[in-house]
Image (cartoon, rainbow, N blue to C red; front, top):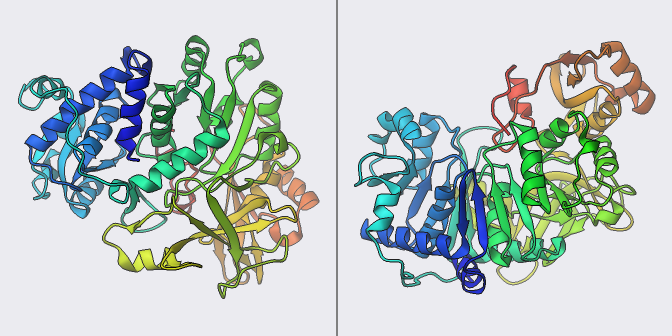
Length: 515
């Protein structure tokens, strides 16, 4: 099964059902299918060949969604580029994967047009708001037929490149096939128990796989997506949840931090909401308990995933208060285990090791980076399969439930001891006035590193450095207690809403991105 075939099947079943709402635009499944057919014919007329790349450089909008499916229908590979990407990095991505067609808008085109001369493979630019009919998205649609283009792909062909920044260097393109993505869609929608009655609000960028898959999943089962640009105006999102009778609300910890600071949430009737999901970074237990108080009827799915295989595990909602720091067990159709530094499987419970993943969702590798691919994909257990080494440390309890410890790169070595930043952060989050916190290692001549905590407090809080250190001393071993506390008004975020420890270490003060 191909991703675009999931849309086509749903459009046949529910042609007049609303599929996508974005601002004032409301599109049915039939409309999205027809628009993407027309655009696919346009791409083919522009001589897009099988498995060539189409870049989508836009804010969340209906044109982004249409462009994704049009690329797939034209047998191409879609590349959604975060709209906050600066011109230099944009040019790197365009050249790295030889993007042939770019769909953008006038504002982004104007800011980056000088760089396009450095991209020899870029042949066509389509603007969703251009006054030039030759370049205008909708004028182009009008010139091409609504019929379905011929299918030239099979499920092992690439469907998407998702560029992830990583901790250092240039972004790397994660190669995902139709099979990878459809496998993930089937598995996730199975444990979320999605039905055509589900209405999902998506405030996450489509360049972030968590945001992208809200569209891909909903279109596979006939649900509706309310697509927003961000969570910048939380009361507006709440109004939409109530107005549209939203049943599914995917969040990241930065969203929960904002949500839980809002006044009078109890006055709203959230009876329509069926589930909340979280991934990217684990929710602090304090956030989980507060969300359960506010939404007692709502299923909360604590999950773990990475772009290289979309999703790995989820915790059954009924266990969320008994195992609040766990991200659950492997999701359907996936197998996981832990290995030590020598690559040997760990069998002893509660022993820290690197998470290894086996399943059909695993990427094909990093585009143009065979050496980096070889570090993450290694020979598997059977035949010629490859398994994914996550680069993340976990523990597994006696019941087989996973607990995230740290990114390999984030683990802090201090005075010969290994410290998980997540453990320290969870303790600091126990303080009522703490809104956000991030723990990093700072170089020290004697200990190698000392622990530093960045903390955001509620307005008018009287909490000070001594209060935080005393609380940590009561709840942590001495070597895990932060030596330095720095208060901030906000913490820098990645485009996907994660707190960026890299930017913190570089001294960035102002929040770098919208959620």
